[in-house]
Image (cartoon, rainbow, N blue to C red; front, side):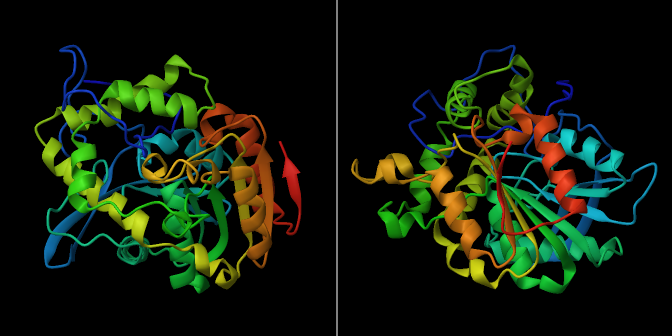
Length: 347
């Protein structure tokens, strides 16, 4: 069994160019089930059972309580290529500060159900998350989303504004409308073909360049194997199908035009070396350099949120919570206590 490591965060390639043979892997690399069976999480995994779109589903989640509660809850929304487990560092930092932490695996991801006939929308995922929180008796919380989880966090805040005390966005994708900028449409069949070519080497190479700003630490490797292992396992077709439909959701359901409607205090944390943009490699050559410019995107978004503070990490990539956890958590915890607005800071 491949055991959990202490660092958190990792991602599957959002760009394509994955050209290795389908599901090829050395014999000594792990293979996991469609719901990450065989991969251990750092905390006990609970399951929320519910019916959605005519199907019985299970949403896996972590519910970690602090030893000295401050009465507040933070809900952590993972990115497209992350899981609840990869929030481990943030869970430790937040619970040490007194926060109860809820970290779900969204339907279609990680240890949660991967239904074949399911229409993925950000509204549906937000509704699922709200139902989970209601089942736990949580009616107010801080919502914190990373990457695609940032898009989901914004949609959640738009749908349930009275339930969100503060909103934390960590290198959220969706700060631009890729289609409007020239990224061509890709069919669901096209996304499926790309998913069938996922390998550990492709995951690692993409993340080194984009998520970690051309750096690498061996402690990131468990997260590469966590993701690649699902594509090696017996449930790989269900994993690839869910992933393809989720990419289609991301590419076709922008939240970009609604920033002005998000009225609660917002903290926007940006690694300036991030270059993530869905479908960038399929865009015309003259368009590609205009996509994923996070130093610009972060500043533009911060101006549009009515009550926002921007914190930039000039030397970090898409996952600042992994590259520099102490700096990152110091910034988050400070803002949660004192959500000043209208400032741009560097860390």
